[in-house]
Amino acid sequence: MRLNKSEVFAMNIQGKTALVTGASRGIGRAIALELAKQGVKRLVLVARDRQRLAAVATEIENLGVEVAILALDLTQLVDVNVAIARAWRTYGPVHILVNCAGVAHQTPFLNAKLPKMQEELAINLMGLYTITRLLAKRMAAQRQGIIINVSSLMGKVAAPTMATYSATKFAILGFTQALRGELAPYNIRVIALLPSLTDTDMVRGLQLFRWVMPMTPEQVAKALVTGLQKDSPEILVGWQSHLAVWCSRIAPWLMEKVLKMAAPLSRTGALPPVVPSHH
Image 1 (cartoon, one colour):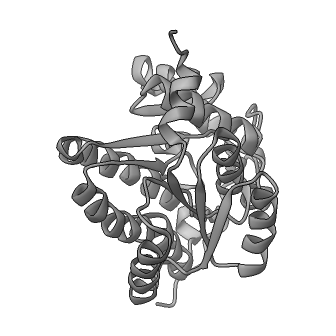
Image 2 (cartoon, rainbow, N blue to C red):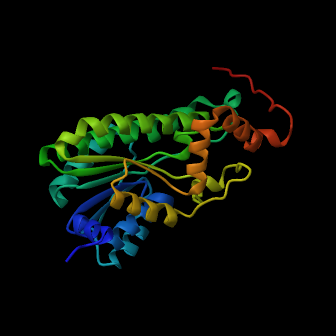
């Protein structure tokens, strides 16, 4: 009997343990729930907010999947080292890593505050690097693993008012591409997930870009599963993402013009006032 792709995927993740960062809300939560529905044996949920993690854990336990929660700040290197070593000993090997933790601060670059920029770099990039390094070494030793790095459409097409966020998401794609080649001999797949604007807590505090229709976190999670079944190295989510990337390749000047018109800055027709820096 020949199995279809979804059946093969379900067999491949049955009995496996997945660790999801940023799992307390938004895309991370949706991915954790989707992996539970797809048949993983155990989920290790990582985020800073223990209460929110506990609520997600209850949802997943109701699906019959084992859950462990790690309330961690990924910028605290020693804490992350200790927690991952302990989790590996307690719950066994992690087979799937989903790096979803991230923050976004929207502001004109000339008015950007250094602490906000540093937070984006620390969580989006260094936090991802730290936990990936710890788990990739262990995955390499067991000659098995899947690493999914959540970038963004803004990792392909940068946008005004989101300079630092875009920089981190571009960097994640470069990091993912480099690791894909390095870790392939160890039977580790390294994949980039690129959602477009998604309706999450993080996004609700931002001024939206014109003409962009937000997706739901559940749509992003389902697109990830579909991409994993197809063995895609990069998973673009939604037709708007495919159109934007295609346009950026074929007519980058046009894409830049559209982004400039779509950005919140263009709505007033005037330049934002520049706040002098006192650093």
